[in-house]
Length: 293
Image 1 (cartoon, rainbow, N blue to C red):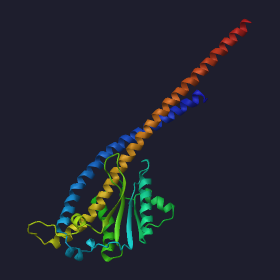
Image 2 (image 1 turned 90 degrees about the vertical axis):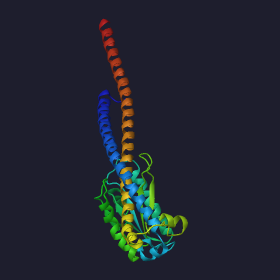
Image 3 (image 1 turned 135 degrees about the vertical axis):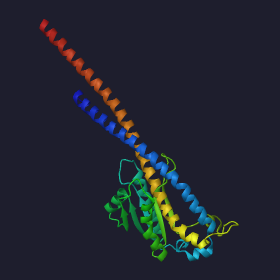
Image 4 (image 1 turned 60 degrees about the horizontal axis):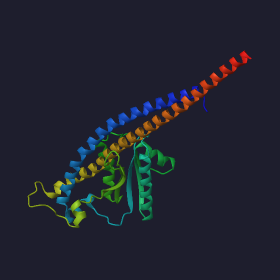
């Protein structure tokens, strides 16, 4: 059995660790609230853009705008964007995203599709560097407070390359934020743009009985880049919120485990202290009896 002094030292160490994890849990909870607000605020705008494109979509417009070009099964080259966090201590959050990205790359390679990987976040970039996988681009400056400008910077070169035919699709691996406890890793195809009405019915031209000012072409030309950039922005903000949720859960579990360990160490310390006191009493009684004899 360990000595009482050693047990006291271990108890103080675990108490300090529990204080740190409790503080990190509280910080993550505060950041999660703000991140959740950003996710909720981004959804109505995305729904409005999707509705506009779905209403105005037609096969004629799809031929005029490269971002609406549907490639079908003939996908020769895909740009895969992996979003992870810059920091750890969030459980299996980054590991699940990296695992899904590897699975998606293997699936595309089996289909004969060439994949180029773009990394956002230090954890994903560090992993693929470690295994020797080349990254087409990388960003570590976005952090957990992404802005529409960050999304535009990420998507601008990819949109240009897609429009020129250099790549056939753009997909993103991110954490979909359903709730703080439900953040499944998800693959979403951003390009080509597939309007909801066109995907659901195979028909275009779902527009109602109204007059467009300016023309449908001018509206689609203005809205398409915003729609693509907003899709990336939503992936960034949902991943940021999911990161805080995962970190809060991980730190809460660590705090609870530290509390259980402290209780176990204190029981062990009490038993050790009781045994030490019993031994001291026995030695005193034995010494007194020896003096009497």
